[in-house]
Image (cartoon, rainbow, N blue to C red; front, side, top):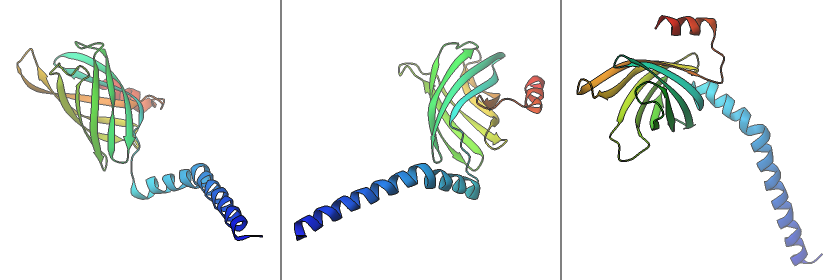
Length: 168
C-alpha cells in the first residue's frame, strides 16, 4: 500500500469516527449530560407555551406566551387574548437568575410606545410563575403595577393550581 492510499484510508476512518461520535453525542450522551447539568445546577427550563393572567388597571388581561430559552437568556412573544389590548403582540427579552425571571416587553410594532417589564418567581420546578408587571396606565397617566400569574400550557394544571387561580 502506498503512502497516498494509506492517507486516504486514514482520512476516511477519521471522518467515519467523527461522524459516529457526533451521532453518539446528539442522540445518547447529549440528552443525558443536559439532564445531569440541570439536576446538578438547579437550572430551570421554561421554554415553550405559557398562559399568563393579571389585573391590569381594573381589567383582567390574558396573554398566550411562547418563550424560547438558551441558558439563562429568554426571548419570545406574548399575544394578548383578553383585555384592553386584545390582539396585540409583544416581544419579550429577559434573564433567569436562580428562580427569578426578569423580563422586558415591547409592542411588536416599533412605532408604538407600549412597553414595560415584569419580574416573576418561578414555582413548581419552572412550571408556574407569580410576580408583578410594571406598565404605563393611560387612564391614570402614571406607572402602575399588576399582580400576574402564569402556568406552562404543556402541563395540565393540578387541583392546587386551579384553586390558587380561582382565589386570585
